[in-house]
Amino acid sequence: MHKMCSTLNRFRPVVPLVLRVVLGGLFIWHGIDKFDAGISMVKDMYTMWGVPAPGLTAPLTAVIEIVGGAMLVFGFATRMVAMVLSIVMVGALLYVKRDLGIISTDPMPGAELDLAYLAGLVALMILGPGPISIDDKIGLEPAESVATREPMLATR
Image (cartoon, rainbow, N blue to C red; front, side):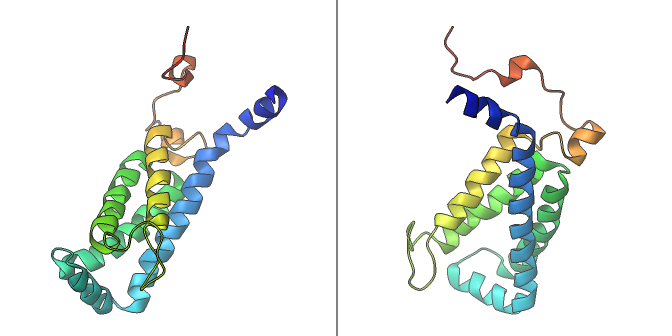
């Protein structure tokens, strides 16, 4: 077990990259899909779900998803973008999925995917962008020290 963990630890630097690329790509796709479906249709759905100011929030959500997703992919302002996209996901959970529950197929999927997105975004907020990112290259992230890598609940 120890050998397997040691082997897997070598891949730690790429974990934030994988999270960023997958989540960012999915957010880009969802934002583009809102424009492809028609912002007026998205606005009508937002109105039906009770989302405040649907004429503003429908296109704003699409733009945030596209721009924020791209920023995640490249690792630029990662923690801030993850926070903003988390707000979008909380809004989706509160307005769109609240009556569906976690697992649902009628009339649409439940909140399980939204919760997975939110978990990934929270992980990025805590982990940061990782060393393979624009944030790291331009010094937006503090240098990691051995002390910051110690588990918070470590026993001595």
